Image 1 (cartoon, rainbow, N blue to C red):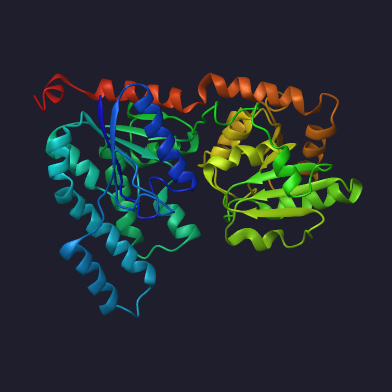
Image 2: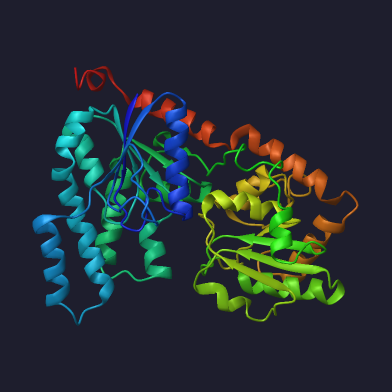
Length: 410
């Protein structure tokens, strides 16, 4: 099958280091491994670093008059919120990409357009309709709500109306959590058009065979009980409760140490822990993450009691694949994934005492970390790999290819 993968999000680099970039890379890699031909069309340049562009990735950024209009709007309305110019840019791109991608798609002759949903992005759906091929939309968050809640959204009514239109008109909707499936139903998407497909993992890359001794030695953790957190330090990660739980544990056991792998605006929320109890590495390259996870004795997936439940954290599945005991918040896809006491331990969101108790059990409990970790990896190998997700995606695409659509490029 020939798949055109469209990502119209200016913030997602196809070869970048963010969780969104990792999702894109792994989805494409798994589809190609199954024998499908995938070409990626991106609004963002390829990489975070000046590497050579990866094969099969095409940068389709705003150029010519469309880029000029974005600049002119920003200059003319300099007194308006800065975020407004970025919203205009996204709207312009939805129109621009329909023209910019027409010739490349005619040359590629895709069987389906697979799009990672981004705010205001209706161009992929319009292209699919123009070429009479199926459109599959992957949704990782209710973006209008998320932007308005955690960042800024000036054109909220427009964004929400477009979001409903795009989600209800796509041929197949892939969502990463059960909460997002409920969100889609609330917008009017029928059940038969929704597929719940949580994030996955490459069990060979994230393997218990990966060594972590060098990381422990590098940061002076060889004789410590290492509690790990991996991810961007965003508001929805309940770092306050994590810091309090670690503080409680360290007061009783001086060998406790928190290893934070990642960076972001929430770093200051860990400021209550001094250097004797916490190490922050900052962001690391995605390919290096398994070695850092290997250095951890237990990995925590923290979310607050007032947080949202639509997420599907990559690091949850990666930690499980590493056969690490996971302590996660009892909410959303975390609670849906972890069998409490079997493949991980769940704590009540926002409860530092409960989190501390579960971390202690994971490290020093009767069964120790081994049993939890082994069961977690077995669970991941069943239905939480990128290969499994790619197979389900390809099956969906095949069901959407009607005879007339199958002959589109004949």
